[in-house]
Length: 317
Image (cartoon, rainbow, N blue to C red; front, top):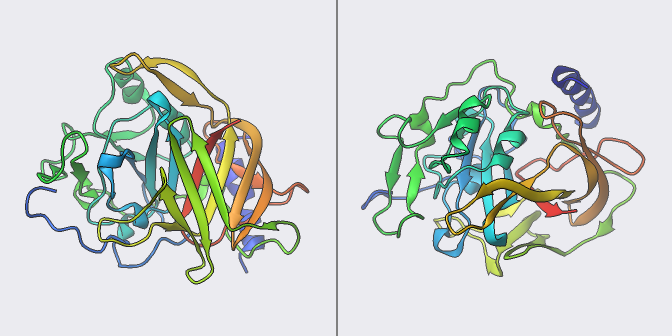
């Protein structure tokens, strides 16, 4: 199934379902207009930012403004995040800490039309693949001079931040996040089981999502600690996707000799979709790297997500 055929199919389904430098201050990062993420429907180039996710990198900045956050496994069983922003008019003022890219990111980002990837760099053997990928890489060496800065109150390498608005993204005719394959709408009338908490474990990292009836969102904890923004707010998602995928060794290693895992996001498999305090069994399918990922119920119907921020955690199948 080609990419544009997939987008048209998804659009039909959706229509049916939907009736710092020293002294720098981190302010409200809920979005360029002060609003929380919605469904990423704004047109324009997608911005993806690779974000550090070890203890010294927290709290992160700008994660709460992302439309989608992908959590992937990296070396030594640790985790790293990729925050995706679908509308140039809704960018937060600062995002970070920014870290290096991985091969998994290149396959994942092929679903988007001319995406921008903000990252700190990559190992030398991966750089040619990034250069040949259909994306616009924005590293500190390529971006405008005022786009990146280091926070003097943090230790390197966990202190690099980006100002997304300085990257020069403009709203245009792009399809934003419509090519993800995600469908947003009311929860299915049938199926699903009550769920209060779900933990997803990597070899050396874990994510816990706890349903808050009051906030109507899944409160996030990472490695056993409550995840907050740089201004003290809870990180929370409207929809959490636990996507079971093949995680295999790649040809790349870090400086310590640890192999870099590659998560196969093209293919199919099982998933659980958490929304509205319930867990839904699902199946995911992505036929080609240029396609988005389709999530369906056991009956083969599109499984809609709740409007708001989506977290996709890649668990090992």
